Length: 118
Length: 179
Image 1 (cartoon, chains in turn yellow, purple):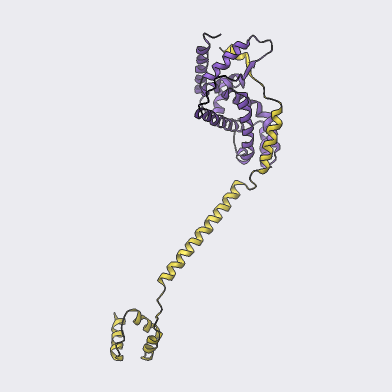
Image 2 (tube, rainbow over the protein chains, first blue to last red; image 1 turned 135 degrees about the vertical axis):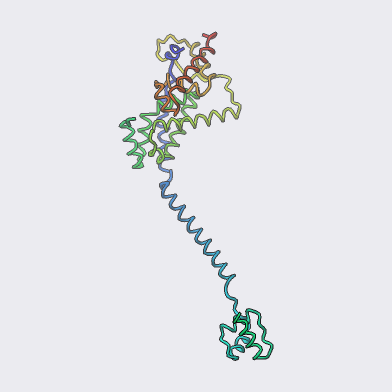
């Protein structure tokens, strides 16, 4: 069997093929990617990191808006409490904690006092 | 393994992004790759087309090639993958070749191999498995030793030798009554 195989060979490559193959491959060579794989990876990492940063910033921003100290809408009530001798900050706290002004300055003061003591 | 001079030169050209690298690969490996492809495809037409495809892939993957430790083995694997893709697509299309393409010829003009013998041998080579044909091709058409075969295919020397022996037995069996 080996003798038989020794007597044969594969038909030779056609001489015109060289030019055809090399010209097509060289055209591809010049067209192929301009940037190295590591450079492309660096760009990809940069954009992914930037996108993640923006996403985190947006999440924090929305959380901040949700947890922001509610501003007392009733400016006149604050002013009234301030006029009773209560600091502005305490007036805001008092109104936000639901203590109602029932008309009696003394009652209100006492209520506020007991609330702050708690 | 000692790196041949042309491979050192090739790596320099690849690093410099010089397309002359393609010429150097062609000069040193095209014949071997062509014989390998024709041997496993049993077709010179397929071999020529795949070789062209392979060089385009080389141009696309030039940076990966510059990092390859064994360029010859790397390119042979690329060629084998392309050949296997084509064989699979032929199988899918159920493209069973009724008439075989004659891809072999007498080694010498005054060789004792007659046209009939060549035709029968050609047909028998088509009938053995791709793996068996690969070893016969490497041994006879590329002149490789079992050790080189094992290195290039990434298999053990025993596997290479046993595949080759089985291929010869198979060919013998097919040709027994024909020649």
